[in-house]
Image 1 (cartoon, one colour):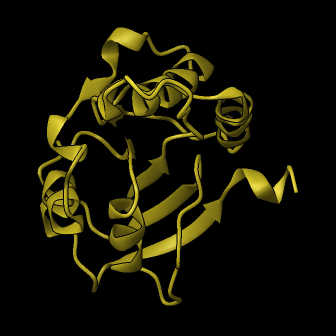
Image 2 (cartoon, rainbow, N blue to C red):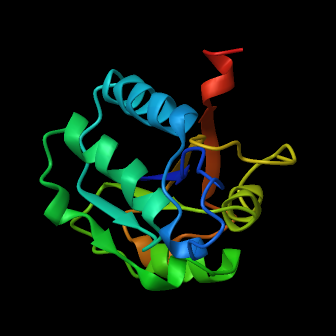
Length: 165
């Protein structure tokens, strides 16, 4: 079995209107939520084989908190440029192309794509993956290329407002 965590970037700042969308950093809430959620996931005693992120600053900053929690060098975060403006089907293509040596992979990206991707495998409709939300997706196959709606399901969903109402 394979496990994919689809993690939406933490809350980002809109305070600098001159910044490009790619360059928007996390805001104070994002800087609170990202390390908290990283610690929460770390407490579930999982081993991460690969971290893959959108090139957007807010996604990379979120991924860095998770990498640091596992003591994975930030330099080992793989940047997948197509995640930034990908469709849910493109995210599925990326997942299907993962190395079979990897059992557990973290993807860091954006809405509405991640919500649509999660809904491909969820029995219940998810209206919105909140910022810094984590979706654990179980893939019941030994080969990532075989990932499909038939053998893949949303197993758990965590997000900051469950802990910071």
